[in-house]
Length: 189
Image 1 (spheres, one colour):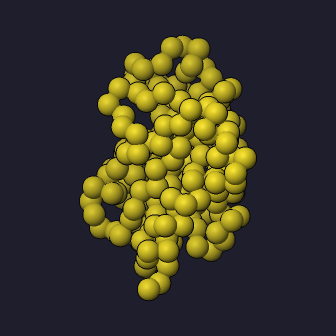
Image 2 (cartoon, helix red, strand yellow):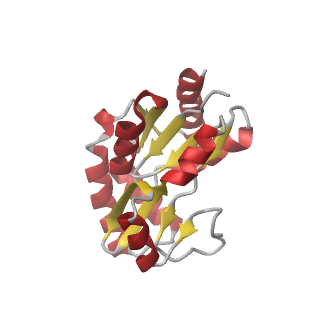
């Protein structure tokens, strides 16, 4: 049995990355398994452990880091950790499935470094920072201070876009979904 490939999507918060991934997974066009990331943040309304994230305590997350259980992990916001468990990805790839990861820019570049040509990195860009702010405010889920933090983080993340294999601007969602599906099709064949 041949091994699967790894597709990594990264984007600043509010760029439609999760919507794009879910649309592609729901279409069922590709043999893609979603790798569930781990975090120490509490679940949001409707999120389930093992489905949306592996929700870990801060202590358990740090223990897993110390044990080398993550391919990548990062303190994305002060005291807020996210990471990809190595066993989760290796289990899927070794069983012949292609894996799609939804992770931050530094994590994506670490996965690429670790897996080389077995991984394709795709960066979803906002049309502009102003549009990104409008989208985040339109969600109605974050305070103005958190939105400001997310915008600062977005500007930092966008600076890494040239290091990704593919960059896609999400100006029109359907087009961004099609462009992402094409990039995946071109990679996995």
